[in-house]
Length: 292
Length: 133
Length: 132
Image (cartoon, each protein chain N blue to C red):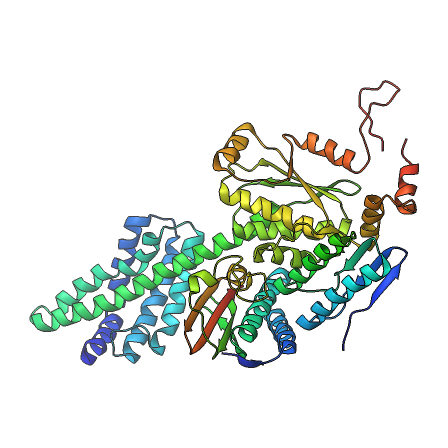
């Protein structure tokens, strides 16, 4: 095995130019010019050199050793930039896998009269390239996950506004689905705002929640219960007919939580509970006024 | 033995819990409060827990116990000032403390008690009502 | 990684456990709600260790997973009588003592991972983990 890699290292070095040309061509056949030829060439040149170094230092067929650290780091970077450019996992892994064909061709030429050595060399290079390819795909997935996590966090921040409607009355217009992660963030921001504004009533408007299943209902009840523990009553508004039907169908017990079909109705209830009402002003004007 | 002080104000008993309570202290408080309610004929108990950074099931049970016993002795209990993080945790823990009245702070708690006991000296509420048209 | 051990022999040890867990979670950068959840779970489990396990100890570890996420693991160990029916002990409202029966089931809900091993006459080991 040891000889294989020494051989591989010098082989790579000796045939760098021809390998490069074929490798780049193989990639461009699939991904076209999504990456500028110069950029691709630099990436390929760099990686080939790192491979020469790594195979020179590490005689095994594993890429877990310290010799491969720099090469893997570069793969991670390539993978990340491919991800950001919208490449699929297989398109990203292509960077490594497309090197197989040119390398195999080269080995065949070099070892044409030594079939045993040829087979050994093919096996060694396959092992190394497969591991590198998988590593690239894994890195691609990891970058995707990072992007998703970041977007999720952004969305959570954006989608949980708590607004003050009146002295002592808050509204939380909920948009999107409620999972347990989001529920905690929604609860936190609602309860925090309750404490800051000393609001007695909070209206949770679920007009923007597409479906209410048992889990979502449970999350809603949790939020209402937590607010109640702090001393604030919640009203749930924006319950569309189909959602009302689902709630009944699922047998979800909303207990003694006040519910209203529209935010306006809920606001009216909140006002009356805090000893206020809405009425028309006596002087006739296009807009209706609101008085305490 | 270490005890949490209970203040008497008119027909109200006030307790502010400011230490990290160990279980015995919580049990003492429950006992002391019950004794004081029956000794003074207090109509209401206000417990301020705004300084507590956790309420576990033991303290929860103690609060529920106080409210329950006070009710038998014809006094109303209100727990005020629970921190948001504590409220979320209690709900997740599975305790909703049904039957305990809650309020955001001491002022609100007092108003709630006065209101429900129909006491005349509800000044803060009175001031607000005076502005109503 | 970081490893710390605390004895649970008296009621004031429960208070010390709460304090130590709160400090560690704050140091790890958990949000206030998660700090409170973890501390509350620790309080429940420490009380179980004291009451049902007749005393024991807590091992606190800080963790880091492959993705660089940090976490905390709390393991409560006692040499008490053990739990005869773990499934029953995990039921909401079940209690053989003076709690509300929320200790085990509640702490399970407050944390991300929960494992329990118990052998009659040998003791109980409850391990809970929360990731950031």
